Length: 249
Image 1 (cartoon, rainbow, N blue to C red):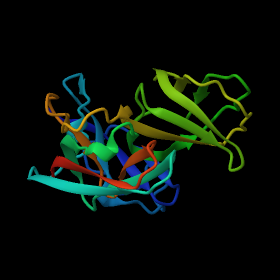
Image 2: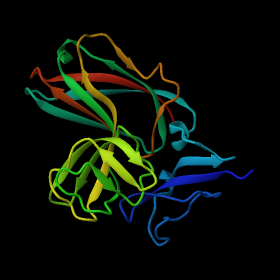
Image 3: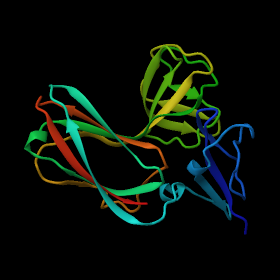
């Protein structure tokens, strides 16, 4: 029986990922325009269709070599109460993270942090203008988006934080979000998404904090994509934070 697959193709010419139709072969060109430049190494599977059953699996969307590794990182946190320090992690090949282990020391107590993946990744251009207080928008395609993802929209001058996606209408390519629009946006304004991984993190003791081990599966990261840790120094002193990422590569 034939297996049909829908792919996400990074189009370098358009500056965002483009989804294909269901195909029986691996894509070799941009679905929108065969003259566009694409990143073939970054193409990933979104959906697989066989025997009228659609499967969506985060592991299979980012295939890797299946090799285990643990990477340790050290973030240098600058002094100053309220300063935000960011640390980007990226790999030149696909990886899947199984667990993250934070190893806080006494200096980290009281500080907060967030972790996101694919920060501010362009998903498309709005097909209907947005007015103040709107809580929904329309895109050419909503494939790749999910409830809980964070959205923003910009026209190059104004940028609005649209909060979380709270619902998706796949029939009409409509996305409903939590934060009402502040500035009006014309058709063609750019919508970006961010995938939250850790929200409202706070260090309250010096015990190792292990995340992800009880979850079946892993979180995939495509080659050259970014996972970003944003650390807020609330105690003022300069310090470091060490953490380990267990991954498959």
